[in-house]
Image 1: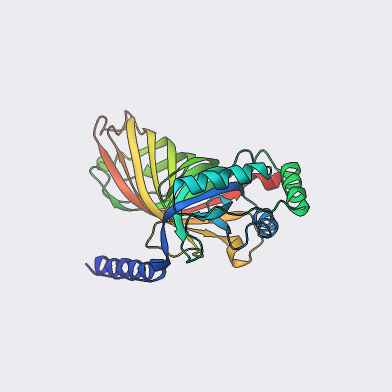
Image 2: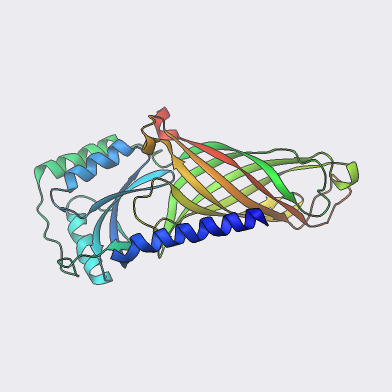
Length: 301
């Protein structure tokens, strides 16, 4: 009961603060021109693009990438016009994303006047030349402790371990930014199933959903709120995992390491516990809390 009350208070506080800061934002569109796991690259490109799009260039962190976006378009037509201008600058793969935008009196939907400068073109060339095909890929590990167990898993719970792969692939869905990843998870419940023990592995495809563009959250938060949905082979059959997390990029705190830390809680469920225990064919599950640490692969090459 005490944990429930504390959790409710924290939730109400976060929502209240978010609504306070979000009063000058509306649903709209921006154009994403670049994504990289290296903050310095994103910041350098932003500083150059600021000359042509003053006050319209933003860098956002959505694990594992820093994303450079331009514009505050309140309708799709304005975003399409902006996209054409940006593609003329040398970003043929730029694309429109739906997101929360800042509103200003002079902004409305008027097209942005673009001045093509040599410095911008030079930076674009530098970005292309230094682009790493592994930008956006990350590997890491997951350590979790079961805090609530389902049927047949009573008693001592072992630690969950996992390996992670994050990719730059994904898609925007309104204010939600969805990235695709993969995970291999091991679990061990040594006293489960009446003392027979219960161990196994899961092979999951995951959707990591960035939540920071939700309208009730302020922009440029020092951490990234996210949700995770995974599904795949889990135990002896089909399984899912659903949870939430707070992503803590160390670079935001002046720690010069290409790491991101995710503190999470999630529920795991399977429809078949597997043939290696006396609970074969039985559905079960558990809730665990833990930490994921990912490393930017592109920095190794």
